[in-house]
Length: 111
Image (cartoon, rainbow, N blue to C red; front, side, top):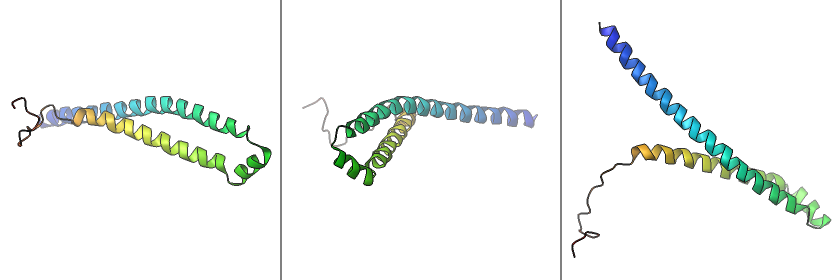
């Protein structure tokens, strides 16, 4: 009979792990699609404005690989925003409902 208890405990643990993993994957996917859309629009705007520069400036920007630098910076911003979204979703479960009262009495209703 002990195997039934072990199996039910194992199924409960695995079920919670799968549910949590799917939640994080879903938050990450939604964040990625939304943030990636905004970042792509920003990248297209920045790179389209390079065309309005004089030809000499365009050549200098090409030699400096500014377009690659813009892509790297925007990829870092996208990654940071996605990780912040996942961390925010994880913090919702970890934040306590009750907070310890302030011992100094500041912020209390009484004057």
